[in-house]
Image (tube, rainbow, N blue to C red):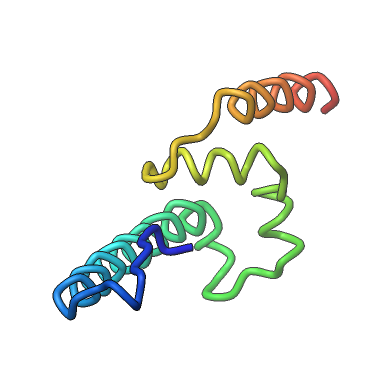
Length: 99
């Protein structure tokens, strides 16, 4: 799950330490991205006050596969397969005609 595979029976202490350090850097990057992403999403709703009801949040940012794919694209670490990207564009086109 964290991208590192360390075989305990053959790993040296340096291998394990390196793996842990790499995981820590990835977690730090993820938490930094989370703050940036939250601020990007929350900024348009800040006028409503420090708390935004879930209904209001979801009205502004509807949960969807396309929204998840966009978030992964913005995160930039996990490449989004072309099939998902195509699905996101098809969903966006469909939703723009359904409104």
